[in-house]
Image 1 (cartoon, one colour):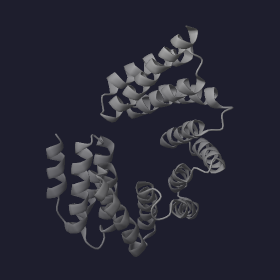
Image 2 (cartoon, helix red, strand yellow; image 1 turned 90 degrees about the horizontal axis):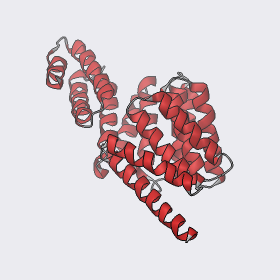
Image 3 (cartoon, helix red, strand yellow; image 1 turned 45 degrees about the vertical axis):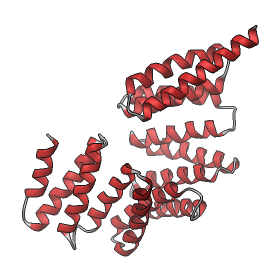
Length: 278
């Protein structure tokens, strides 16, 4: 009977966890949080540490999504404590997510530490896509500190790991970041090649967030030589980011449109986009 009860508890916990993740992906944030908060004590009641960690990891993603940074950090730390002796992919994901959170908070030293630990673990487990994504995020951590050579090396390592067919969207993510780096360095031909390759993948697979990011950076690339063309790309990025609810990213693209307008000597397009936003 005890085994039966444990099995039933596990089934309920798994169902709630999966339903919570599904609700989060559909942007039903309150519903997702309620399900994951109900799943966590169920996992704990049957002594399943990996299940507890999974629920906490997903709760942390929710908290980060809604800007509750301290709650996200606390949940990630609790999740890591639960899996600290388990060298598996779940621990790697918690390490990666902690690194990303610290990156967002501007604590680049802590970000690099957690992301490097994720790289080491995923490499040991021979999970190439996850290893590559951790390298991409290490590269971004370096890029945010203007360490361009180190950032480029990490992005190229990710590209080499992923190859042509292993993970098309992961490869596109690596290329868009390397393209962004080339834009910053004024290496326009290399930037165009990387960004165009990424855009092809994102549009083919319906990845609107990725497409918005590429179009933003294509706009920045074309700013000096073709400000009108830059405004077209940035306008597409604004529309996508608005539809996706990415307000900070939308504001970044609007700011870039204003800069392109100044290059042209006018202000109509950017102010028009801002009016539409209201």
